Length: 320
Ligand code: TXA
Ligand code: MG
Image (cartoon, helix red, strand yellow):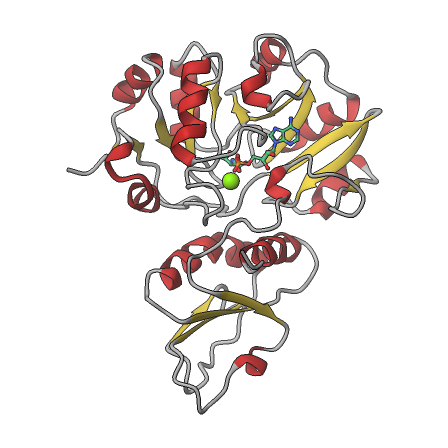
């Protein structure tokens, strides 16, 4: 029997019993548990096979809830919250003791966001606690953007996936932390860096080179298909007409399929980066299920959401 369901009451009952429920958000599906319960938090890490040094995002339904979990909000964090919540923006802020160090991997900050999805918001409003929820995939694999993706990953290990349709944005939230009140980008995501800068001005972009991995979304290999995958500026470089490899390719907008390519995924025939972002993970899931020898992805233009797509493709294609 399918674990996918619309039953909000059942989701509430499971979560109150410290069980896990996969929930839809506008970015990707999350594997949710009571953020105030170490029992539930431990189950999240165990089910995902996630290392304990990788902290979780806490989801709330309104800004009023923020004061229950964070000590203070820098001015620029407030500006970003006003501009983007509910929405795909995660803010990393000084935590209160209500949030256990299991959630934050021992850090004194907690990552928090208000998701912009009617089912997630309805569920959060019915609960007396916030939900800790990482993406609902085994550690390192492609994030799920449909209830079916989650079901395929966890099968009957998980009791329930709350149905919320296809995730509209299709890529994780943008994560912003603060150093002396100034914004630092920890993870590219669903809101482009340019859109963040339009609200708060200069943003420091944290890279592996200038910092130890604060946001293990920055871990090298991540978001990865099982099939060998490469990222290139020129797909033709990888196509050898005399080879009999079964190949799938991902392009931004090019719709012509070279002869010896078995499958083509065009993320946005009209060349729209938002549409391409929404389609990225479902295309990777499809290609990964076809038994291909190789997936070749074409590098995206490096601005706006193209940067977030390139970031994910780079991590998906890092060798093991
Ligand atoms: O869109 C999203 O953000 C989705 C949905 C479900 O909300 N969630 C998600 O969670 O992508 P996850 O666990 O896959 O990624 C959370 C990221 C990790 O890279 C983690 O390191 C970072 O958030 N993070 C969490 N707490 C942090 C903290 N205190 N400081 C720095 N980074 C933190
Ligand atoms: Mg994740």
